[in-house]
Image (tube, rainbow, N blue to C red; front, side):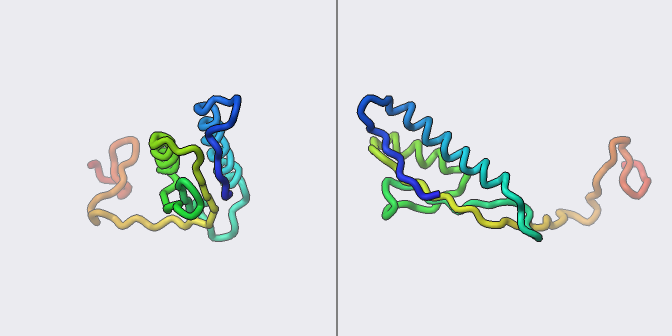
Amino acid sequence: MKKTYQLNIEGKNRDRLLDAAKHDIRKYAKRERAKALPKGVDFWDFDCKAGASDATAAPVHFAEIMGAVDALVKDGADRFYVEITSKPGHRAARADSAPEAQALRDDGFADDGEQA
């Protein structure tokens, strides 16, 4: 999705236009996440850019895109540009912090049967 959102439209409230733009961004992400995952893919990841225009758009993390939009609006921008492209994501395996750290079951025993 590559889109420029106008915030100053005659007869429309600026705050409602901002809310509608944010809703559109969230709706796009929800639609993309609902698509079937290709084989070997764990989740849908997003490459995002935000800025006053497509020429000045800077890369941002998806979780920070609403904050970037709010910052642009707070600075008094009449419009803002958002680019979101989905890509396959792969989960990284976590490294164990310590070999003796084991998961405990609900009854307080370690997986090997000894009480912790």
